[in-house]
Image (spheres, protein in one colour):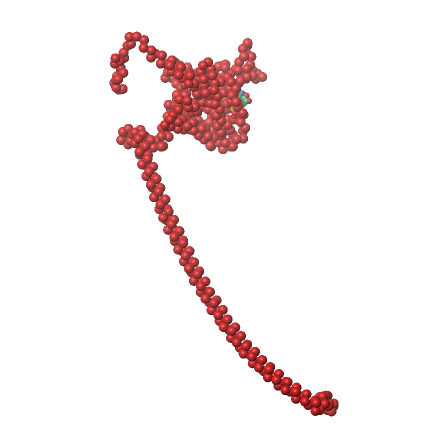
Length: 442
Ligand code: GTP
Ligand code: MG
């Protein structure tokens, strides 16, 4: 019987010796085998100005040629471009994602340059959180795109950090492991480089920028990490060109006055960076991303959603209780909104009713006015009609009288004519009586 199995957690554990080989010493191997078959993923974010040497450095570190198109200097804003690759070394498969900033530092107003970077990092955290919150999770084969390391490319000015560098690093330091590097270090003199490095470090400290600390808690890597930390920020040179040095080919940059060897530690810190980023601390970078940065994002997000671990009396608060509290809060809010909408509706109806009443009153007034005008017009017309009728009547009377007079005159005329005719017959010489009369009167 095993005595150490069912002990409560907070009681001291007894150490027991085994009398024979059991086999759980193969557990680390089992883990290694499982992880190896599953493959690993590692995501690097390169933040740096256009043309500072991001793509060349990535090609140099991974000893391959990744696809990359040089960015133009006239991008209206900063964009992020992610590309994923499957790499294999021995039997280890690595799903590598390289994210580049495009157009960083090219805008006149650089106030918002950090925003797309923060948004990208948060979007990857959010995607992971959503996967975690699913009922049917598939984290086992989930393509984790959370950024494990951010290489921050500092321009080799030999002077100091630019405010854009400080602002961006400050905004990123709680979200990602920042490793600052001085790019194109072959363009800066040795004594200047030393001063430049100290200046950068003191500026980072005085501005409270938290860069990635190489872990020194594990004894296998403590020493190397401690010595490497002193060389931060690494001054690197990138080149995929091979130059013959002695009887060997080596990656280097050739100048009229000499050759800068990328992997020569007296020439630059490229080897140190590769050591720290890939050969020693890759797993720690992955772990820090999950346990520190993602954890912080997750905590803030869940708190924002109303989840909490303890109630105000520091008693554990279950997910069910949180759900109920959130549901009640939501229902209350819904009811409040419903009531608000109802009142708004009643108010609107009243307003509309008053408007309609007003319109009805106006219409009545208009109708009365029209009716009055109509009656007045009608009366005027009737008066006019009566006047005309009177005129017609008097005209008729006059007409009748005239006709009577005319007929009388005609009768009188015809009698006179008869008389004259009779006279003519009796006195024909009187025909021209008028002429005769006038002749005699002459
Ligand atoms: P974008 O993607 O266009 O923003 O550029 P980048 O940051 O990826 O730079 P890239 O690697 O394309 O390099 C730009 C130029 O700088 C190329 O001509 C490189 O040969 C040169 N270059 C890259 N690394 C170094 C370096 O360490 N030293 C020097 N002197 N030149 C370098
Ligand atoms: Mg590039």
